[in-house]
Length: 283
Image 1: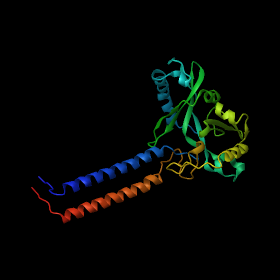
Image 2: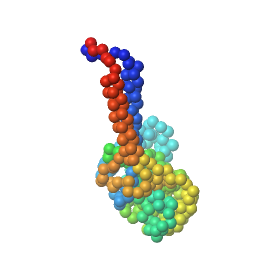
Image 3: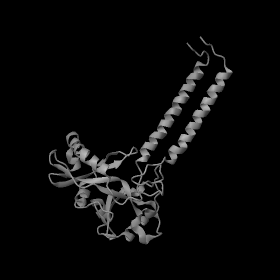
Image 4: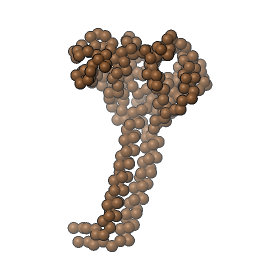
């Protein structure tokens, strides 16, 4: 039996230090998991992945039925009818890039500032009527999960009849809870909030000028990947990946991991050095 005598408090401190370092390393990995799902797809062309459709087919109804049974269905514009529920086509969503919201450069190419986002949404129908919107997204493990249920009835009503198309882009202005549709060079409001801001369709160039003016003093809110999540948009640059590509480590995780590994190495060095300099009893 091997037992180290003396320095019991020191060993306890070292154990605590190692535990803290391990916790911090796990924390950084958790940050990576949370942030990895926030990617945008600049090269996306409005495709709807087969696995997103599969998730919707297998899980959307259960999510809605559980909501009806466990919550007040009227909050979601639903009744207690759990039988007559169906869903519309999955539709890709888009985001405004940082350049779209800030710069007037290349204003004639304004529509290119709307990039595909990591969410696909669908209209929820109950008793044949559009009542709300539900969505799915791809997580950091490339699996599809439930994103949101409850974007509202007015959005659901205006999404009816829309089909996935590279020429049709659905995007939001997050601070205003406003959803818009870009189509044929024009932007129109899709829900009540957007229609109050934009009573009639306008050219996308004019819409962009309005957005720039509205948020000229706003500071960007950057996620770990450099994407600007303010105003419902992204566009941090080439940090985003395509739909079929693996994602790279974010800067937070990369540098955090380097620091933590260095701390682990330094701790190990100190422990070994102290053990060499102190006597121990071996039984």
